[in-house]
Image 1 (cartoon, helix red, strand yellow):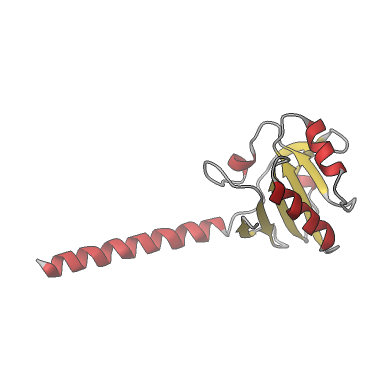
Image 2 (cartoon, rainbow, N blue to C red):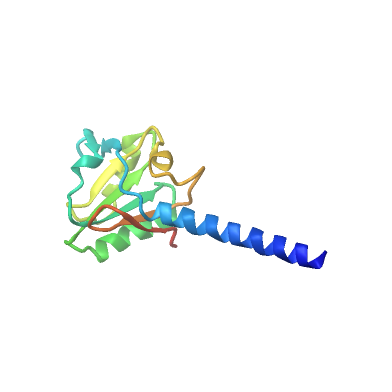
Length: 152
């Protein structure tokens, strides 16, 4: 009887580890999804097809009501790398609220600021049911996801 229980436990652990590894593999082979959000500065649509190719892309998903999000945005300013594309996305209903949040922060003009007023980011990027702020997604030069971080 103990032999069967040990075999069962080993089998369950094996399948759980396989499932976790498979999901991790799937996540890190995903590319930047197709999306269209509103560009905060100009109030015109911005599509994922407009993201520069052959550059590492950092996407920072923030809330204007989040103190650590402000720190993350300031960190981007301090550590700006011209060889990377930076995109900061908010999901505020009012684009004015997003503008006032970014207006008080020193950001390089090359940082792409987007507003996702329909709150599609979590679904578009397949992040599950909810996320914590800030959520930072790093994509390599081939636009493949290499890291998801919830720092701060």
